[in-house]
Image (cartoon, rainbow, N blue to C red):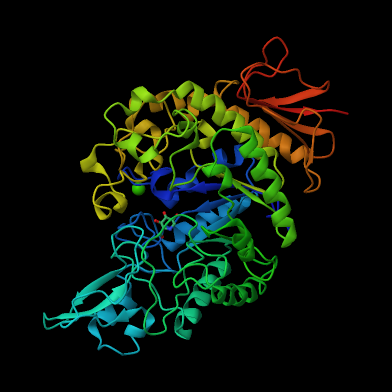
Amino acid sequence: MTLSKDKNWWRQAVIYQIYPRSFADSNGDGIGDLKGVTSRVDYLASLGLDAVWLSPFFPSALADGGYDVDDYRDVDPKLGTLADFDEMIAALHGKGIRVFVDIVPNHSSDRHVWFQEALASEPGSAARNRYIFRDGKGVNGDEPPSDWPSHFAPRAWTRITNPDGTPGQWYCHLFAPEQPDFNWDNPEVHEDFKKTLRFWSDRGVDGFRIDVAHALKKDLSEPLRSKPAIVDFDNPLSGDDPIFDRNDVHQIYREWREVFDEYDPPRVAVAEAYVRAERRVLYAKPDELGQAFNFDLLESPWDADSYRGHIDFNVKLAAEVGSSSTWVLSNHDKVRHATRFGLPQGADRNAWLLSENAGGVLDMELGTKRARAASLLQLALPGASYVYQGEELGLHEVWDIPLDEIQDPQWERNLHKYKGRDGCRVPLPWTSTGSSFGFGSGGSHLPQPAWFAEYAVDVESADASSTLEMYRAAVAARKQLLTGEDLSWGSLDGGQVIDFDRGNGWRSITNFGSEPITLPAGEVVVVSAPLVDGKLDSDATAWVVVR
Ligand code: NOJ
Ligand code: CA
């Protein structure tokens, strides 16, 4: 199959996120790898995907699941080689599936050759200036240079020890201490990332997911300004926060756009920018990254008004900047949506994960039913749909990983406040029996629960009513039905019912209420739950073609 040169291929693509360490293991060492991905290309093709996005597979000590990169232009030997990468991309392209890789430009790992060089160099040297080093405050320099907070630790500064054993300068890290932040005021950093973008583009990569796109630029003028806490979306709209979502970060993406446009079709990108929606779309402008993740559904409770509001707002907002919207229900950072919808409304998910009776509180059946309804609704929305590995199986969060097997730095670094994100990163079940449920011939780097058997790919492939078969049918129907990027509200829309029309007679109707509802006359092409006496069940979605 040859890939089209259409430069707009991404606008309404279905893009599947692979967390490589947990997708498929080809050599039985318990860690998923690139050959594992290649071995599952037929499965990926059976989902009808336009693209896959691979979370980091670069050399890494895994202080943060690979988001601590030692070398941006290589493959972690635990996951394979560059030759394996070439083979994988050729196999995917051969099936018409494009490939995104994850770029982590805010920070490297502390094992990156530049950071090692910085540690061995003098304060004020060129090597130190690639990162953010400062003298400490206080008499002996033993207080951090500012009050900046970190996502994974109480503060964003760690003091180094000089080669002679004396205490040295401090460096900035908005995440774990093993993830030192680059100094994006340094042109050398700009040049190196452009080199990385070209390196992967030359190897045939079609797109990039940009990690923490909003944090690269900091206000480094002295004295460093205060930023005492990180609260979700706490960025002001002025663009002048000391560390997040600064106006000057956009210059970086304008430079990157020039690199993307060197290719035919131009390379594409999607920003992970956890900022207010009005600011988020700025990253998605056509002269910058082109797309930005919209996490509104991922953060939304199962509620019709909330869903309707997010849909209406985001479709309009994306159009205003010339992008298409993006939709996400799950990813490698959040409790899986089947589980979120099966917990009591408003439950504190961190507290739930740490509770003794987590399994008893979760209503798996209800969660799965709503997750299917939400996924079918998502796949009908205009714009790009991002699907996280395992969500096509309706997989739930694994809530009972023993604390001594937790890998996520959130657990240790945040002083055991959050159990972290491992529960959505457990290796996929491919078969209902066998070692690690067919993930590989050996074990699994995170423990898989017994209930995974019911969600295995072989079980669901053999069951026409499974979540997997619903995804396959939905993505195939979407391809047939998709015309423009328009959405208009249908006649049933209002109250507990969401009904929208995508043109071509294609309506997606979701019943959030407790009683079944009558569907409009037409052909029911996909449903998330069996009809009840010909009616759409509660917590269910149907696609109806009305002509
Ligand atoms: C966002 C990624 O999705 C997350 O997994 C990671 O921990 C942080 N960025 C830091 O890179
Ligand atoms: Ca392996």
